[in-house]
Length: 207
Image 1: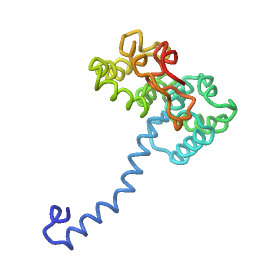
Image 2: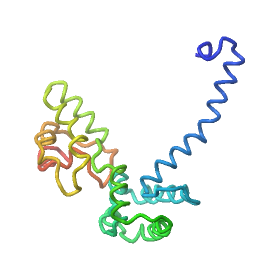
Image 3: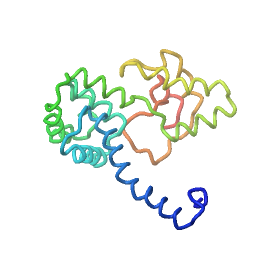
Image 4: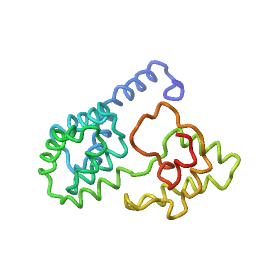
C-alpha cells in the first residue's frame, strides 16, 4: 500500500508512521468523549477516565452484563438505583463507585430526568448477541420472512420503555421460536439478548 501513499518509499513510510503514531491519542480522546455521554456527563472533567475505567472494571469483576448495567445506570441518574443494584450478586458492590459518580454529576446542572433521557439515548436496552445473530442469519437463509422481523428490533425498540416488550409490535413475535438451539457456553451473562426478551422465548429454546 505504500505506493498509494507516496511514490517515494521513504516518504510513504514517514507519512504512514505519522498517522499510526497519532492514532492512540485520537482513539483515547474519542473513546473518552463517548464514555462521558454514556456516564451522563456533558462536559469534560478531571478524573473522568479513571471513573470510567473503574466502572468497567467493577462490571467485569462482578460478571455483570455490560449492556444492562449501562442502561440501569441511567435509571440511577434519575434517582432509582435498585435496577442497577439488582444486577450484582452483592447489591452493595457498586455503592462506593456510585458515590464517586454522583459527586461528579453534581458538578453539572442537569436534572436527573434530563440526564437519564440523554443516557438512554446512548445506552441501548436491546442489542443483538453474537450467537443470536448467527442463529438469525442461519434461519433467514431458509425463512426469508425472519430477516425483516429481526431488523425491526432496532427500529421499534429505540424509543420504547424498558418495561414494554418489543413483541407487542410484532417485531419479535415468533422469531425466537424459530431459532431454537442450545445457548453457547461462552456468554455466561445475567443479561438478556434481544431474542431472549420475546415472551415464550425460553419455552422454545434449549437452555
